Image (cartoon, rainbow, N blue to C red):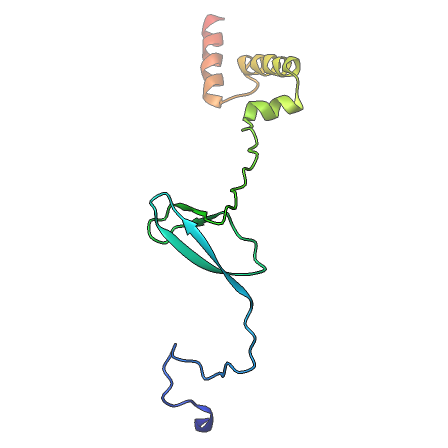
Length: 128
């Protein structure tokens, strides 16, 4: 065990690998400028798709590419409410019929909270 240990090596220190025979990937510098006027460059692969926007390392604002790459405008979906989704499944006439039916059941004491039915039952018994 003692033969395989590296003595004198710091954690997170330098690598003992040699750089001879290693071919590095092709890189490019991509420039960005934020609304605050901060300019900076990011190193990226030549094969990478270059984003039009990058977060500024100084202020955190959206920095735009200085190479003229335009920001993609995404078509936003209109907000669908519960009512819109309900109308996709039922017509207004069907909804009115269901509402009328449910209100009759609720008023008749067949559905709904029990405390409402007890109060209605007492009123009906008192009036009879």
